[in-house]
Length: 378
Ligand SMILES: O=C(O)CCC(=O)C(=O)O
Ligand SMILES: [Fe+2]
Image (cartoon, rainbow, N blue to C red):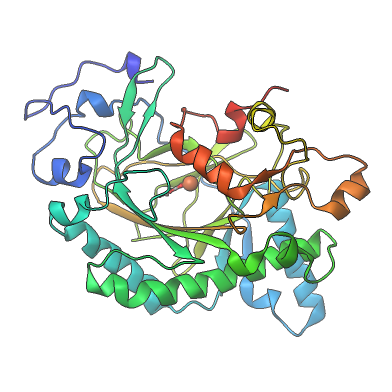
């Protein structure tokens, strides 16, 4: 952790920049040879490379060959249960659109600082936000993350920064296409869990799915083992989609090991979020504080939200596009009724998705702990 990091030197005086400053600016405008102390975060960026990562062929999920389709649904369910992660191929989203959104996000980061600073978060639920982010480590020191981000709510209301124009031109289409794919995946999970058709759409109010677009910029880092893009965490929601500019950096935890989540060209990396969860009986303190008394989390412990992190690259800047798909903000998410009936008990309590998101936005992330894990009592 940062407290044990070696003394740091720089070719420039160490700038103690505030958490909303732009990390790209700091890195690109100086010849940094070492990590400024406010970024110091000791981590091991090495990870295993899996022989094969779970892969879901989206085209088979909609295949008219029923045998193929049911195999694909089964593989999807297995990936959600065993890894909480999979590589999505043949998703039908044009490569030009994927490339376009990465280029547009890159252009966003080329904008003058004043333009980007317009969106520094004023309240946690601002629909458009930009910044860098920080966390409190376990010796209570604030650590700045080595990344810049812009986040915007794209559904059910569509928001987009006014510049650059190229982002405005394609973000709507990109969000719409990813949303349709996410919805099919969620229906597939429902089918694999044995739900009746339409059950999941209704229970999670998927017509009003809460969808958030984010573009992360991780500037090249002279010492990737002394700073972190995003430390280990789980995501809120159902499925997070991730693509990037060809620079790998996502790592996922599986069976106690960290794996590189390298992506084949034109694939989408999919991370299972807390609301399809999970493998532990967390949340209880928080939910009791909210005075809710219902069971929580949709798959009643069958699916698994996965710990993941973003590590840095010493040579190249990295852009990742992250699209989070959750239920409607007004939905009270709890274990699906058919599963509670089958299991004879609910493993989790219920909570409004909006409240969960709000809580999440106001918490600092602690290294190595998911949001839910922090609240775990058993
Ligand atoms: O950029 C990455 O690889 C990970 C991003 C991520 O996990 C997030 O934004 O929640
Ligand atoms: Fe994440």
